[in-house]
Structures are given as structure tokens and as C-alpha cells.
Amino acid sequence: MEMGKRSRPRIRQQARLYGDGPELPPRLTHLAGQPWLDAYRMQLRSEGKSANTLKSYLSGIRKFIETPLPGENILSEAQREGMIISQLLERLDPHNGRIDNWMLSMVDLAASTINARLASAAHIVNWLGQRWPDHLTRPRNSKRLPRTLTKRELSSVIEAASCSEDPLASLVVTILLETGLRVSELCDLSLGNIDLEDRSAMVHAGKGDKDRMVLFTERTVEKILAWLPVRESRGAESDKLLISQNGDNLQSRGLQRLMDKLADSAEIPRGRLSPHVLRHNFATGLLERGADLVSIQRLLGHASIATTRVYLEISDQTLREVYRRAQSSSED
Image (cartoon, rainbow, N blue to C red; front, top):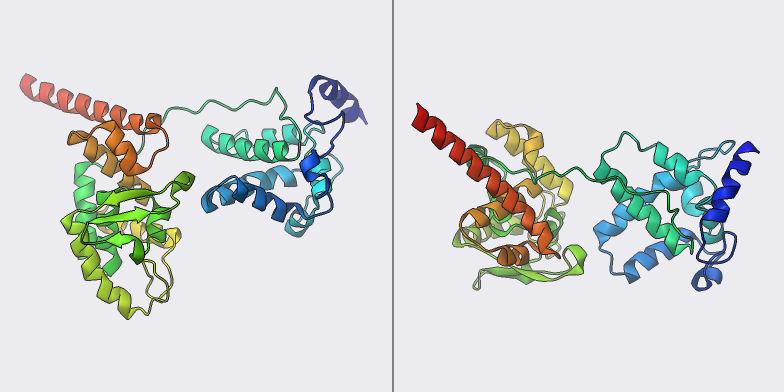
């Protein structure tokens, strides 16, 4: 085939980790006939990947595996998940053109989305003992500052939560604004990890599988104490703090639905309000009140202070806006 002729030079140019063809590394040779999905999940868990990261990786590589070459049929979900490791190796051979076709299918996606999927694809290619092609590089992310609510919007959301008929509304908004918890951490928060007397909680295996302590205000403690009888009445069978009306653990989707209802009540666009936006408001609020970056980093659970430093730019923008308003007033 013509495509085969064009691909040969690339095979000679790109070095492989093992041998001259698509061969499994020694650590996988004895597993060649085993289903790839279970083995790969086990690999991700052994690397300490969180449940969210594992889900993200598997989602990121799905389209990569399914992308057809000329003459191939599109894989069904059962076919994709049912392949054995040796079949997956043949399919994901970095030099057969599948990666290039897959990359072309993502041209209209945001750079951050492409980079997340490339990271997933590169990981599984390396796991299969192959080297990622040198000519495939990640697009540069455009610099975007974390979204936060204005003071007026935030006041409207807090008021909407306090007036809501949903007993979870005020509790959730208060906890997110006063602890900076991630949505997954809040959903996983157990009563056994909460110390109301100490006004703190331990977050176990947060992002990056790192434990950390979060602190409560007196208002947060009051909201939790007011929620506990309601929680008990819902017949909760688990130890999780947040329980839905039917007694199940509250999931992240349920929290976002709650955010959407509060956004409607506060008369702000739904896209402006999410648990993560309230986490950003928590961080910027600390910074504006004089907290140092290292303390904010620890409270947010950031692995690198470079991630926390982005909030400095938000405060800088706020400072410039205050200055412009002040100058406009003086000129009037």
C-alpha cells in the first residue's frame, strides 16, 4: 500500500524501546494473552493514580484506540475492551499512522484537552514498551486565570443558598468557600475524618494521593451541626457527610446540579458557578486578606507552589481594577 511506503522512513527514524518491531517489554511478555484493560488499570493503581486520574486516562485513550486506519472498521466498545495486550500493541504501534490520524481528529479541541489526552496516550504507549514519536509535540496552553465570582455575585449565591429549600445548599456553599475543598474531596469527606471540637477535618488521598488537613470556621461547624439531624433522617448507610435525599452518597454531578439551581436563584449564568469556582474564591480571599502563598498552597493541597502562584495574577488584576476606578472617580 502507498501508506505503507510512506510510513517506512518513519520506522527507521524513530527508535523503539525494545527491538525493531512492535514487541512487548519483558515485564509484559508473560501477559501478552491477558485482557489489556484489567492489566492497565492495575498498572495505574500501582503508580498511585487516584480514581479520578484513572478515569481520566481511560477516557483519554478511548478515541485513540478506536481511531481506524484506512480499510479498518470502527471498533465497538466490546471489541475495544475485549482486546488482549498483544492485540493492543499491534493496534497502538506508534509507527502505523494511527496516532497521526487521531491527532488530526482533535484539531478543533482546546489545547488543555489535547494535552490531557496526549498524556494519557503517551502513558499507555510507554507501558506497551514503545517510544512516543518525536514529531508529536503538545500544543502550548493559552494562559487562563482561574475564574472567580465578583463580590456581588458571591453575595447573591450565599443569599440564594441561605434561602434555598434544599438543606444541603447552605452547607455546601459554606464548606467550599471556607475550606477550599475540591468537589471530589467534599463528596468523599467522612464523618470519621471530621473533628468539630478541633474545627478541622482530614482529607485522605486527595489529588495526587496526598493527605492534608483543612480548617473550619465556627460558621462551618454550625452548618454541619444543623445538617446532621437531616442527614440522620435520610437513613444514610455510609459514613459520608453529604447524603442525597434518597440516602445515597452525594456525587459530583449532584453537587453541580445544586450549583446550577443556586445560579438560577442568584440570577447569574450557570457557567459562572461551580464547586471549583468557589474553591478559587476561597484562595483569592485568603490572598487578599494577607495569607502567604505557602500557607495557601498547603490549604489547597497543591503539589507545586507554581500552581498556587497563579492567584497572585488574579489579585494583581483586582488591584489594577481598583486603581482604575479610583482614578476615574478623582477625574470626575
